[in-house]
Length: 396
Image (cartoon, rainbow, N blue to C red; front, side, top):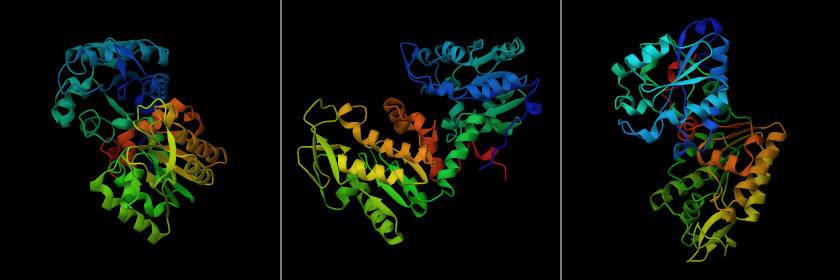
């Protein structure tokens, strides 16, 4: 997928509004994770190097159209300034006279950070009039917030009808890497799926099954597949209304020659919060009072072996409740197989969300080709959906 990118002539001397995603975790006004801020360092430095006047716009949290001080982007300003290594000035609104004056007074080499766009209820209605107010002080728009690209909001969609619009480098990389694993992946292509629910992955399974050489199913969603086969899963997570889907997918995989692998053993305990007492059981013989919380050592070996031999991997969803050290071995073990694939020259992509969090927490984020910044956006992209924040930028 090729997106319209900006060159120096497109932005030099221009007032440029950049949609970023600074939707970061905050606690007592302190940023807990700066990954999303750092992801936009490239677009900021490139625009400044090419002589643009840069303003950044983002949402933070879910203020539902009201001004919520705890969700003000003023809390993010100092971290952005530290990461970008330049002055970042905060504007207490994102539309109106204050923004116009702030842009007019902006100094060379200084970035302007606008207030949370979701403090205005019109934003999430993709309101054109509000988009006109956002666009008014600017001459160019750059969309760099991949993780917000699946939302049709004024600052991600409607605004692109009003200003010359371009994809930022982060958005371009996301589109390129996700296209490489969901469009025409080099085989063997291994799809690794985990996380809690089958319902979150239905679209990905349906869209990519015909392209996959193997599908490795772990995490909580594996128990809906095992339960659909009539196996004993104890108190493990089970989506009864998705059991028919799981059964159909297993049958379809068998029919078209795709290896759909389920856990052969699992780590169990009485609760995800357990601090001891974990046991390993065959995946289809979990005691009635226990729940499966991670894939077992034999499954780790099988999954890691399949991953290591792949040419292309898309991984979405951890293999267990990795936040608890008792149930992190499955995700870590499969990650070692994915890292081996990367070392052998394969293309390995982690699809954002909990998987990206696991990659960072367990230290394998630097051992894959790409870690997506968007959970929901990466899923919808790989489902083959048209994303409103990307579609207007696609170059035929």
